[in-house]
Amino acid sequence: MATKTFQELIVWQKAHQFVLLVYKFTESFPKSELYGLTSQFRRAAISIAANIAEGYKKKGKADKARFFNISQGSIEECQYYLILASDLEFGNTSELQNLLDEVSKMTESYTNKILSSKF
Image 1 (tube, rainbow, N blue to C red):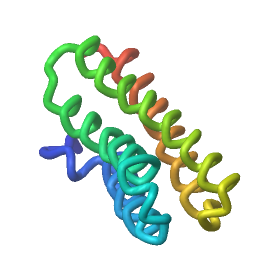
Image 2 (tube, rainbow, N blue to C red):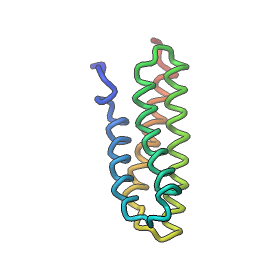
Image 3 (cartoon, rainbow, N blue to C red):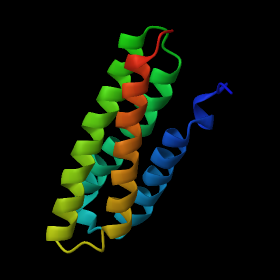
Image 4 (cartoon, one colour):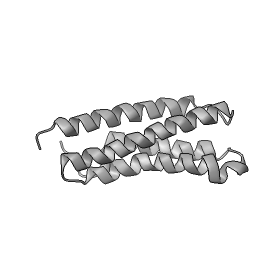
């Protein structure tokens, strides 16, 4: 059965869950990071889910895939922020890392499905 909204996509649901966890995780970052790592991390996390949502409504395969590719770029950016947060000892990143890995695999799979479809 086809989905009617981006909110029905499991990949978007997982990406949104990641955003919510990033917000909670970054609440405990030092205040000196408010305009640095906190802001950048949140922006990149939001970009993952936002580009999935935007790409959902695009008509052509290439256009849809482009937004999912942008989302994948934001996933990689978040991968770095998790490494940095861990190295700076800002908290345990394992839950976020596991969820981000799942979102990454799902995004790649969804993109491949779009590109190989015959619509």
